[in-house]
Image 1 (tube, rainbow, N blue to C red):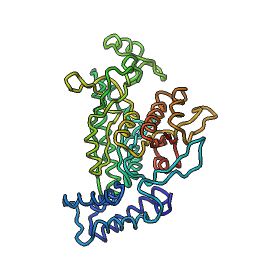
Image 2 (cartoon, rainbow, N blue to C red):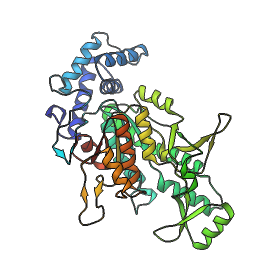
Image 3 (cartoon, helix red, strand yellow):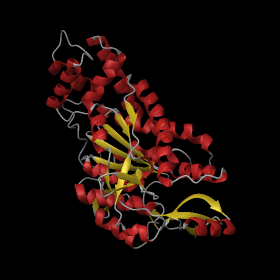
Image 4 (cartoon, one colour):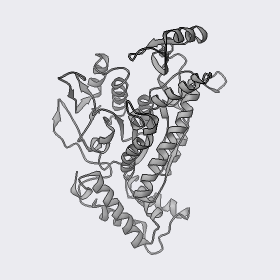
Length: 417
């Protein structure tokens, strides 16, 4: 990365903070106004788009430029950030690292356009932790999201496995049976609140703005999806053999053995066809909000014969709905952040080796050979490959803490078309 843009995410944050103060001093902006101008710059592909964004804010009386032109403001920001003459564009750098087995990592730093970030369950609750650890973990994830949001639009999709399990267990112990779609909806509000507050705090500190919103999101699935014939996604609490047998008889649930001992309910995991609230997501992104949507893969719904929607008992994979939204919204990349460094060949063996870069075809072949377990890395690798092959743009799988480094091409597994 060019030295003008800093060698670390902390340096980038310092430069943006310095620009914030410079805008406040030169143009008389408040901290919030200066933060919105910076967001406008980073979310614009060129001078024309930046001018349109500033003109909109002026029409809405959000800010005024009585002594300066918008073009002068644009040039001032470019000079402050060192963009002029640096050889970089708002789209990021061209690929610059060495070849890794036939494909080449690149860099998407500084990022531009839209970045879709899929957060794994470790963003809230790591294995062995209780629910009390959620605030600490989510603030760590929020710092990564906010750093990206200094430069680009961001859409966050998140998992909800432990939280759905906890809700279903609480309901069961109280004698109630909570439908899965309603449990997913409840966790979208629960986890959306945590993320919105934590990301908002980070944005307020860095830019003087809390432009973040969480949306309760429905994902349409097909009644003819083959997943309905063989429920395979374990959810909810562990049951004893006697409890599992009784529930299967009373409800028709499919029960499967859990590696930890005991039995769990299995539900279908159909592929998402579309996201109902897509236009609302687009509107919020266009107004420079960080958007949190499709939590837990989205609330699973089917279309009825009269154009209505009905919730169904299923779980949608969050990486596949993130890839769907990334394709539909023409994102710059799909960034899947999880609890491991990327895709490993021979994972869990003494010879395991991180794969820095692979093609979409190689990724799908690895899934078919069973090199990526279906309950963990498999869906991530498949979703990344489908996104890359459909869009011609890279997808990245990386450890949560390495999100910025992954965009720079310094960490994770890149999946190229």
